[in-house]
Image 1 (cartoon, helix red, strand yellow):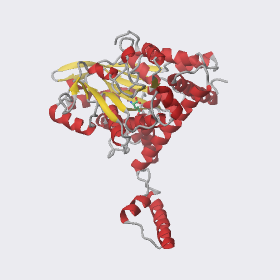
Image 2 (cartoon, helix red, strand yellow; image 1 turned 180 degrees about the vertical axis):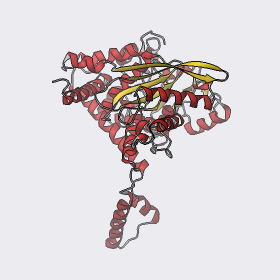
Image 3 (cartoon, protein in one colour; image 1 turned 120 degrees about the vertical axis):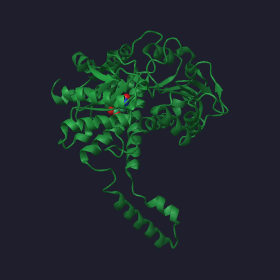
Image 4 (cartoon, protein in one colour; image 1 turned 90 degrees about the vertical axis):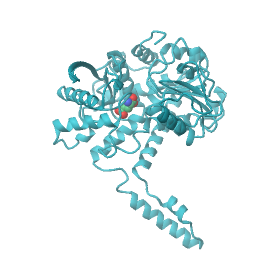
Amino acid sequence: MTGKTSFLDSVSRNFDKAADLSSLPKGLLAQIKACNSVYQMRFPVKIGNDYQVIEAYRVQHSHHRLPTKGGIRYSQKVNQDEVMALATLMTYKCAIVDVPFGGAKGGVKISPRAYTTAQLQKITRRYTAELIRKNFIGPGIDVPAPDYGTGAREMSWILDTYLTFKGGELDAAGCVTGKPVNLYGIRGRTEATGRGVYYALKETLSYADDMKELGLTTGMEGKTIAVQGLGNVGYYAASICQYEGGAKIVSVAEYEGAIYNEKGIDIDKLMKFRKKTGSILGFPGSKTMKSRKDVLTVKCDILIPAALEGQIHKGNAKSVKAKIVAEAANGPVTADAEEILLKKGVMILPDMYINAGGVTVSYFEWLKNLSHMRFGRLEKRFDHNTYMNLVGLVEEKTGKTIGAKEKDFLTRGADEIDLVRSGLEETMITAYQQIRLIKKRKKKVTDLRTAAFINALDKIASDYMTLGIFP
Ligand code: GLU
């Protein structure tokens, strides 16, 4: 990382900036800031003919609400500071979107590409066993989820290991989220973070006065977007902004490099191309950029960094041309870079708000697991019948018939996916309105990250006060 501000330093600096503007007691702020539990483990796993000692972590940042919640990252770059920073962000993220959990994060210091599926399964199961051993996992204790380098497959191994030890537990399925749909998962979890980014951007772009300040028109239609990272988050964010929002994706970067096309890049076609050729480079109509980092400084309205932390730093912040930076990744803009961007008048939609769609739908999944029932099961047919009666009445009173296709559209009862998307949209809109209002009302709050922090701090403080820990 250029600029040398560590991720944890950046998070800490951002916290202090908001805490300085808060009237909450100093001791309470110090308690909110501190990481409550840090579990560092090393365990042996037999890989081939030899043993490897695997370094791993689980950090629970805040116990003001339980369970704690946050993903598990598999990456060679994992270290204690990084996991602490990520767990910290989870606490504020949950508070901002009113998900009643404390923040946590896990990390396993491995490069998943270096292992076979069987070896990854072995590592995941052993990691889970370590968590169980120390009481660091459970539906009411700490609930992991996917993050960089993990997905539904790893979550199913975690659940299965948990069930092996805690088979009779009624709510055991709620010990982890982001599971496959056929294994206690929920529809819409995979797309959730990316879709949340879309809803958040749509809401942001709807305020005429804010857009005027940035020199942009309202609405997503026709906006140019550059995306760094086509993983789960970046892919869905780009694809939904393009196909549902009418945005134009002008630049995309992945592991192998970056491409540009001012006329727009069709994301689904690009994904198919990459699957076939193993690379995004050479995609018809696009130009290959010199460096994959060039995606960050391309001319566009909205930049979506959806890869890792520390991507926009002191060294390249000056060259960012986007008017809006949407932090789909956690911590992509360092605190130094933020100062530069804000001076340039760039609007930063902070990670702890804009990528909170994942944990929001994780919360829905957890609720589904505790209720042991799919959302929509009770009301779908009732709603459908009510709408059918209504449509029938309209036909009867007007003497006209409504076509079969329209009738289907008008009378459909909500399925699980409809309810999940609706809940996610509502969550992202409400959270943005709260943050925006804080920025508008408090003179000293001049950026959305500080506003988001203040929003989170007030909510967490009130939880602590309810608990009676602070008067
Ligand atoms: N890893 C995701 C995040 O950073 C999701 C966490 C979760 O669903 O618990 O927000």
